[in-house]
Length: 433
Image (cartoon, rainbow, N blue to C red):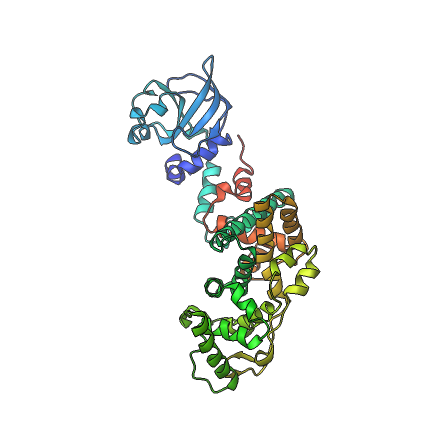
């Protein structure tokens, strides 16, 4: 592949990455004017406005320079970006370009270094393959060749990133609930009951029904179900069974009493779901859990192991829902929600909330507990994890599966290969510099 063919594959992000990690032939570098260049320190990448790298140390000719370095794909980009009018670029010590396309040998007197011939063509070719890959993950069949130690450290970082992201989301809920941890916990659990497709609808439902209201009605399961199903817009009727008709009448009374405004029923998704995952079954399970009363989050804070979490959070629908998936439709074969639902609640809500509590209160032991408990839970089972198995990457526990889910959703799907430890390793493998 010639330089002309490869050049269009180069992006500014990749060019900065190449400079930062010195992925170019470091010997026999010369400025356009012919002065020898030695890169002692490439500098620190600047994420703000101004030159791309600061605190670089270079030997140009016989002089050692310290300062800023600016990178462009073409020398003419200096003028296209109007750097000649920007005072922040007056102290740049080297202008590094992929292609020098001007007659001048310097940029406003700043030495210019062209790297085109020093960058391995294999690196550009591999980057292009990653960017244009149609596989489950960009690195496809090569992902399993990366060493175990790199995978381990990368998964650890990904898990923390995922917990931080979930904690940030729950921090917004906490703020909205006026720092009511019990209310926030109730919202988080409801959100998990609706995942993966009805999470937002469950959250909206929970936020429309204050936790204190539900606790006041906890002694009567029918009233809890009337509030949940009615507020969800699932009691519009008419019904042939007595039970939903009774819930309908109860909700009409409670709606007037509490001045409620129900959700629209079209927000719920039912297609291509197992009956045990129907929102109706999940709402019935949530009602049983809410019967346990107030101070649920306070109780969860005191629990030290997975068994205690499961004892409190594992519930089954009762009464009418022992042989129904939906109103007026008896089930021929009834499969009740399993322990996996409880584990998903723990993984996606309870442990991130525990992590947030430790972060907000300055109590790192809760953050450590959340991280440690992830390693005691079995790995999740879903289509994304099936995809990872097909490319040879297995999850040993929930910590692994959460890390791999985060990697797929926030790195692979966005083609952030240069920010991924696996992608970086594959880019560098076998490159002779």
